[in-house]
Length: 254
Image 1 (cartoon, helix red, strand yellow):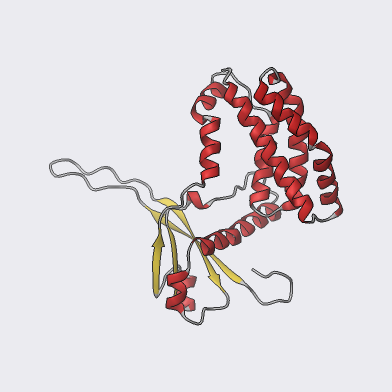
Image 2 (cartoon, helix red, strand yellow; image 1 turned 135 degrees about the vertical axis):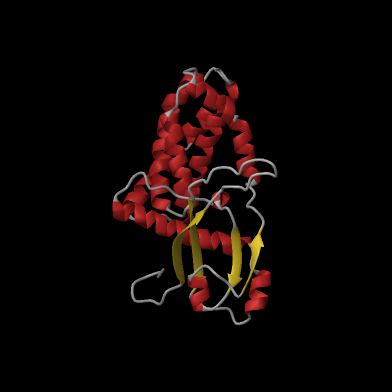
């Protein structure tokens, strides 16, 4: 992974697939369970091109910031794969989906093969407090039942703001600006049906107040880049649409 052509690599990314069988031996006095086909597991190893001066001290100090940076490298590669293959179904992964996360150091041959001289395992990633609040407010199980049972319909602004949030979290500011503008404009129209709710009506007013700013950020994205002010506008627009959707779902008319 190079920041620009001609520069030295900053990280090396190694991907390999291994098989992991979930089969378990039978208990005493019972027949063993039939063999289960191995489940493929992808091991992603992100290697820093410049090794630390003191590997042991680095390993002791390395934590979540290093893990976040490593996942950013993996996400960049997956995003590039999606564009290069023109495959709209190629997905992205998050730290929450990791079976195991380890930090370690080793020789070149070791780390290239996913092995270590010394390593430590990090606890399973915990969802942020913001995401916990968002999930609780949306009541996903009730909403899913309503969607599957035909008592509720998916809104276009929901998908648009999810894409905008993903782009924002992945550092794709231009794409996030375009998605935020579309999500905001779509939410204004779709959520008008719930304007009888004071909470939704208040959120719609906030969306109206940010229309011009969101459109300006989207136009700046089309021209090639965003400054700090425009980036803040994009984040605020996405947060406002998310808040409006939470207010709508809190009405619970399903």
